[in-house]
Length: 249
Ligand code: DGL
Image 1 (cartoon, rainbow, N blue to C red):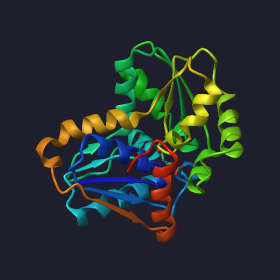
Image 2 (image 1 turned 90 degrees about the vertical axis):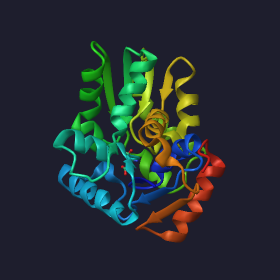
Image 3 (image 1 turned 180 degrees about the vertical axis):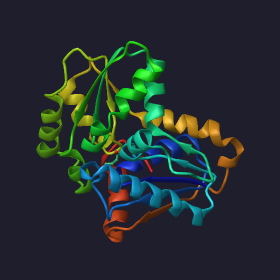
């Protein structure tokens, strides 16, 4: 059994990649929607939420926790990971591995205000890739749109355009430093055109999860969805996200 969590629906983009690679794995996904958006919270609050979320998986006897929230990883990078009985796969490390593998030298990172404020992406990328140029841009308007189910149309497109206006034009790649953003991938692509590569760290995260878990990833292929928010709305959105985006659950 693999545990994944996020503040909300964004983590489904990681879940989908893990499911693609490991069709028979048993997955439990927790959405901490009682506290979404994480990006506007203080580091102290986020560290406490991270501890509680990691402990939550003890009842499911998971073999590993595959992080589906960048903001939590950013806090852990800055203040240290809480102790855990099982391995934890860090999503920001996966992002850096994806950038390294692709050989990008000048990257933008769009992320929550808390992630950008922690500076974790810049530190992790620079530690792994000598001489890399990193520009981090916060995008606080995007998570509330995704949580409200506003994936299509003018409003999310304008919000994405506003974020992209703060990016330099000469980037090799833009990293989705928040798991909600790949749900707006079509808008990023149409605003940025085809010159800038878009990096979804979830792809490398799923590859690493498969390597880490090996045979332990074989189960009944069941997915358990849990939220501490509005349950009917959450379950409706899980179905909806998979219908209107690239996320296939
Ligand atoms: N999806 C999360 C992340 O990857 C958190 C977004 C939020 O709640 O602000 O950072």
